Image (cartoon, rainbow, N blue to C red; front, top):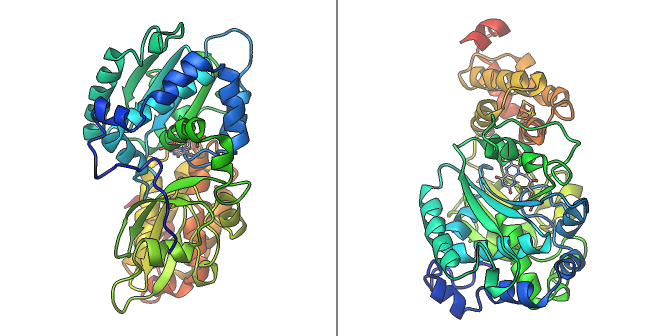
Length: 428
Ligand SMILES: Cc1cc2nc3c(=O)[nH]c(=O)nc-3n(C[C@H](O)[C@H](O)[C@H](O)COP(=O)(O)O)c2cc1C
Ligand code: SF4
């Protein structure tokens, strides 16, 4: 196995990086000082553009390009750091928040300066109480040290960083649902366009970026765009924190270069399977991603290769299943999640996730019908592409991929009884 240089994860587990002085000794806040005192904001945007950094929050959109969409019309701009992190299988942002909060603050402030933000926000998932408290303490230290607020690092630029806690809804991680929630409205996604770049928080030009994305901006300033662009595939470069979970010996967060193979990730980085167990399937991008199988193990783990294989890298949550995994049970757990988290605005998503859950429940109890299995394989075609936000789309890939690959695991629930009327089951 190759040895990988930890970048964002450097010092975690060895140093108490929640203390500002410890963080500073590692070079912390030097890039914020350099940015504010020595660089023009546009030069930072150019550097990020050249690095080919792609967002680490799910969609993999190029960060520099996103920043360049902001209109130059004199209106106040806002930066929002998305720390809602509720994708099943993802737990990297929580680690950054809890273990190295100053790195998160520096990433936000450097990026806020780059886009000339009047104000920055961080939206923290409600359940991350410990991370929230650690972050608030670190923010207090940073403010006292003149790194947040007025006249940052003794220069002319000032920017306040506002902490907002969510209340535990997955949909508030979707950028426009988040913005509604931030404004005190119901956390429902907005119709796009307009995109946040033109009409975001409080109707002002806004950039929403993931915690990890913003943290890499600091490192790109420190080490250069060329350094970042040279790691991994040209169109999908850089190191990435991957949350590996499921049936592996060593689940955890690993910072690896994109382009590493899925096989290497599972067997070498995460220690492979328990004795006697074998590989069955893997979700390469969390609960929203289609499963990949044995024939995909040598696929490079990067945005484009995973998409070409029929799935998505998402936020980098690798959920590994061995031969003991029951796909019917797994599908029910996930579908229950999506049905519960659907905000209910769109009929296909609201109804489709609920009906799929009802059919899976029936099959698991041995009261299903063969028709249910057929429907489970196709119902997603009526949801994906017919809903307002990507949650509807996200509820489809896992279910369709496993029904297609392991139909017998679903049909077993249809074998015992001829079935019950659909409406009776759904009403339960
Ligand atoms: C249902 C749903 C949940 C999401 N949850 C998160 C999240 O918790 N954190 C996050 O960064 N992005 C999440 N996203 C993606 C955001 O909408 C947005 O694309 C991202 O914050 C942009 O940051 P990036 O460009 O740095 O990746 C979610 C998207 C959807 C559809
Ligand atoms: S797709 Fe689902 S979660 Fe998204 S807006 Fe529509 S109902 Fe809400």
